[in-house]
Length: 575
Figure 1: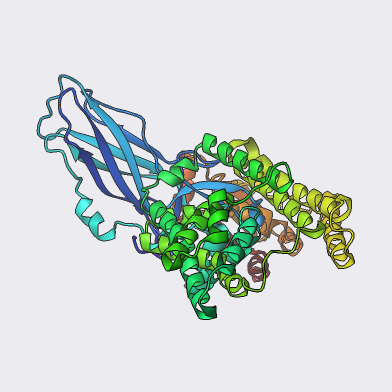
Figure 2: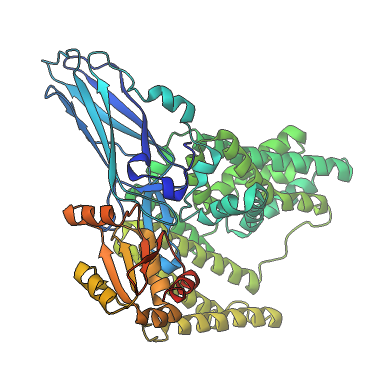
């Protein structure tokens, strides 16, 4: 990837670079071809996707212009990454591109297509970019592709050195379903990242598709002879079979070239996933029974196939478990796809499968003494209902992008509280065993407290009020010997929203700022007034906070997000 520059040194028109633009196959009269554009966003930054979730954000747009004899088709944009903003910014989601970004444009040449030397197609990418601290003004980057000698643009050779997705670039940004794991990898390193994946694999053993397979494992290894050591080796091979099945999925997704991520942008795919999750939830609620295939039960109860058989059984277990745990690990699949690394995909899902399969080694060793699992009591039925509600919650989560205004994201906390109250006090299961009754009652109490907290009416905090920027107001403040706070922001600026929801709501900041003349310069519009302000006050990005003392001297000009404590300290230093 391109090396990240210091935040203050990054210029808007340098944020995106077109590495190559290629027409393949060569365009001929009456024929069709594809223009492939490979661009790259500086590491640590992102640009809005072509379909941002808010009208306030400026979408990325690719324009192709050429001779009238060449007609471009609909632009194919890459799969977007969904980022969840900090709760301080309102908890909204944004749709972005980052790292290596590829666009495809179908081209159709007319019957009169006869390019001359100098004839070319111009490709322009309009974008607006941000990092976690600031946003830059909208900008564009262009390149040309010669038609007389179709091929790569001038930047192609430079792109060979910088092209290709990397591990770090692949997982950056963090999406809804895998954002927590991606955050751990990025902020705490590989060791803790893979440890989190391993622990997640252990937790998957409690899902409704996997739990029935525990009985199969006990039956299978209970019929193996040869002593504990041989059983342990067979169990290890069995778990390796599960790991190979999962790892092959990770490798396939990494090498899919964006097909999986593109599918996850399709509303029909998301609805289908939600329906599958609701079907699995119905099984958890007892409407039908999920159990291993009959052939697996028969083989487990009678066969002694040795190591090859143990491996095949493990592969089969991976297939049977996949429908239930697949939706839960979609975030990991998207993370692997963005990395573009088959090795990372293999390692990630191998670790997940080892976590899933490790308990089976212990079960295999104990299989000679445990002939059957304890019968499902009320407590286990309660657990199954809990996972059923979790699956319903996941279905609602996947429907969120399909519905307007993040409706499901806002509803889910209330759903979770309602489920907790039902399982804690209303459900009939798990009441006969007193220790479990205490546990479920505690869950109900926590759910009631959470619901009360969410429903409790709160007085809106006092917000720092700004006057629209006015040079006459600035001059009168200097005459009156009053300090001035100027906030340069824009509607498409994400860190600006964070400051609105955190810094400018902080009671200490609001109180201290009352002795200032506070003004806000909105730089959203790309007009002459904005150009004059950015030029006069040397604004490179937003938010930019300017502090002027009572004598009219500019004491501070900071670019990027400023938290409440830092802002309070800065205000107190101004006379």
